[in-house]
Image 1 (cartoon, rainbow, N blue to C red):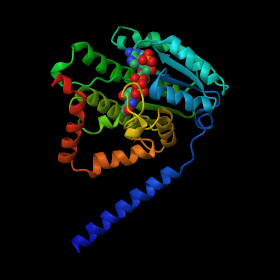
Image 2 (image 1 turned 180 degrees about the horizontal axis):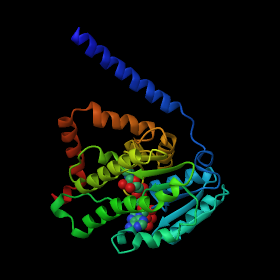
Image 3 (image 1 turned 90 degrees about the horizontal axis):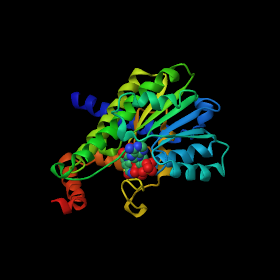
Image 4 (image 1 turned 120 degrees about the vertical axis):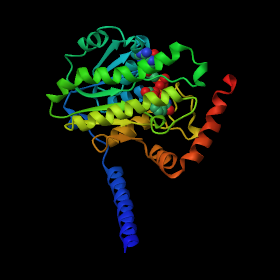
Length: 292
Ligand SMILES: NC(=O)c1ccc[n+]([C@@H]2O[C@H](COP(=O)([O-])OP(=O)(O)OC[C@H]3O[C@@H](n4cnc5c(N)ncnc54)[C@H](OP(=O)(O)O)[C@@H]3O)[C@@H](O)[C@H]2O)c1
């Protein structure tokens, strides 16, 4: 009887999870302005390239106004020129180097430049990554990863949330990574910052239940950060952004795109950790061979 009950409960749980997943996959791609306010603004950090740029491309297709927080103004201007061709979005550039996040008053100065916008969507995307055995980093690389990957997510969110609470509906997407879900040798500090982003995001999602807050945990995306190619099973930044936006409001943490959901499920749940650790170390060792 005991085994029958445990067996039935396990099967019921698995069936429930499959039906839940199918339900979420069938949800239509959201109309951002209908969901988060007509003429609202999306604030995107690290918007000039990679996944941040992918988010801008998808949002511009829906004519959402976009404020880009970038360190390279020229790159952002070029992107705006490109996006303006097929879009009625308004654009704003704020030049900011998040490596200076520790300066006194830094986020006050950034916020001053965006406080008049009706911010419906905040995408904390900016991030940097370096891969080495721990003792081979120079201190600045480590400091940069911890500063750029962790401080903006906390402090920009803190600054913007009070205004979001006055709105009917708003959303925040925080870029974590699959690297924040499982330990990664040679990526130790990056992985730890991404676990920070994921936990911070999921925790405030429980705090502010009237805001759609979600951690986006991509696997491989074809960006300058990783140099992954499509042939290696990576997806494009636009696919990654679309995959996440489709899940917004449906879950607190997501791999987003269906390919990443499948890879994430097998990588983190199905494959036993002793085997995953072995495979991952073998793979990542190739990237750091010159330091070993
Ligand atoms: N690519 C992947 O496979 C992958 C997987 C999982 C998670 N992620 C996460 O996704 C996010 C975006 O990664 P990505 O692959 O798109 O990276 P990316 O292609 O290197 O783009 C990073 C963006 O951040 C900007 N940036 C970097 N440092 C900055 C600083 N100090 N101040 C202001 N802006 C700065 C870059 O500006 P410039 O244009 O001036 O360089 C660029 O626009 C990161 O948080 C990363 O951890 C990526």
